[in-house]
Image (cartoon, rainbow, N blue to C red; front, side, top):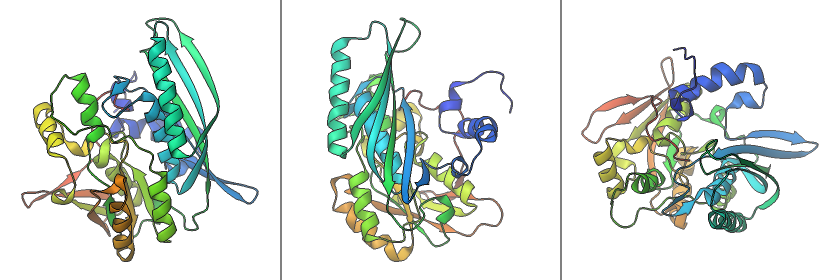
Length: 337
């Protein structure tokens, strides 16, 4: 479908986002690094393998249960580097601030970023600040870019996925999206649902040290678990089958989804990631995850199988049926990250 103008849906992480990247950006920026369409680019500088990633954060509201746009920006880039098998080292940050933004809120956001960087073991080494006239932005936008070192021997990425691989997630889905919506929509969803925004580098490093055969990792951010697994299935050419009854979801998240007519599969997360690994390593991965506070509710939710033709994501439903999950269409939850 051809569009004359950019729509909100083009930034949703779903079907239109995928089309925008593949049809507009990729043909003109095309190179071997970008073609991988992973969370970051991996390249060699002399004898050192490095990983580079960048992301921009436009979440609304900028303060939410469990975090704010500042900590989110640090965690997001740290996690993108980790998903490539890299050890995050240095970050840059860029601020676009609207005239009239409260100075005390900016100070809180900066302090949150500093705390998140310290917890993640990274250093913010450079940055930029722009102030734009009132009405030409929406409070504050933040970009973070990061660089890390890759020491993991095996290539991590979609091309490494093999039939028989297990699909494992480190915990409950939809927490971040629900936390944002609870503030934005004024919904009382009870106690206990906070954004899961967290740095994943420590748990990822522990897994990679113990498992020399992890094939692929991806954090389930924009578009949620459903979008990222559908994208991985399409790009891999395999059938990825997941079991709805095995996917951990908090009851408060289920309730919020019922009220708002949403599907937790498509809600954004900021501290959840999936691992594709051989069945022989699944037990070790689960043990490491469950021993870490960021993986208490880790679960093996699916497997990878050969496909007759195109890659597909199949959901075994809780009532015993099955259905194909595709990239979402439309902007389900705007400004979530």
